[in-house]
Image (cartoon, rainbow, N blue to C red):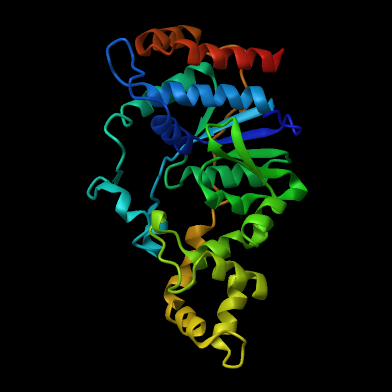
Length: 310
């Protein structure tokens, strides 16, 4: 897909993309020593396609330095609890053959010179939120995580590229897309998500309120605070069941917005988001390419970077 909004900043939800690559590329794709590199090569192909299709002026691979931040867990203990592999270490449950590929991905991105940013205590979503909020625009966020739909801002040219299959087949998520698909505006999405809940993130939501009802309530009352105020008002138009369930979820609804909303004030390190026309560390990259058998995937990315800078 060629993007008519070329240029600007491209933000990658890196873990979302390498998970997608891992499950989309056969594990038979291996290094010379037999180690699976399907996630590595798949991610490189994804980035090559994104650079070719969207011609960004800058690109940042945003990382999960804290995949389950303690401050979110303190507010909602069930937050991502089902994904914990080792309670003592706080590590995430990741397929056995994916974990060893993550350091390889990081080393390859660093050798190429693609900016890679993660901040302890924050998820990649929060890094993305901070960068997207500060950038003058346009900004394109590449993710398979719907939580980031809350960052869409038509006035500033912030949109989400949501892969349907690979990264060549995407939904371009803007305000019109959100109102058409969910019936809420971008600025209402986080409240809608808090009401609805998300089992994949351990967010219970409000009993009896699914996606359709959550959208209806946010659309009718404007935001979560107004929905809660209506529940506390005996003469509001809420049905008795909805009123009862919203009031019963008061403790959850008090903290859910802070958990669901991405941070936009993460203290970021100094880095250069400019796309490198040639590898920053060619010697290291050559060694990585040979050791891990990166072949055509790496070549395609380097070609895309060269074309972009020409």
